[in-house]
Length: 164
Image 1 (tube, rainbow, N blue to C red):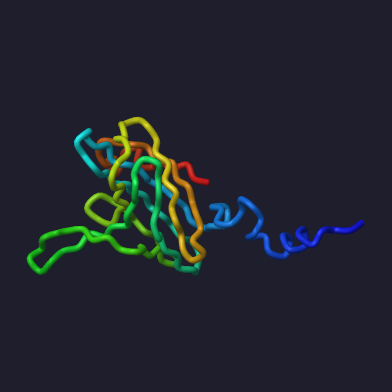
Image 2: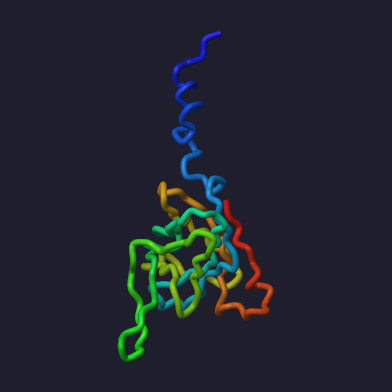
């Protein structure tokens, strides 16, 4: 029985198999505590927060994200100048350290959802596709929309985003 050459190639190089390249199942990362900020109708942007834990010895990067809710998503860091004034700056990527975590939280690093196509409402869920390097891999997270950050002892803070 002959096997087509294509089957051999797919067996040797599974990353070329349709639908498998960049699947979240290959990423050893865990998402917790994620949420998207509800905003008033006049707002042009919103923000998303999540904790990304990395139990491996390899460093990863959050190199961006996308969502149907906004035209663009930018990775942002919070900065402080010499006078203590805080500001925000867009960066190409945020590090997810080996045996550590990247915490996106109010007042700190976050994902800025720019040029909203519609406004997120409390109680709904928003799907974000996170771009993870190395390999420009994709990881989906479905996050609840909240008016404000959950309190540390609030069960909503223990929410584990649905991710694939």
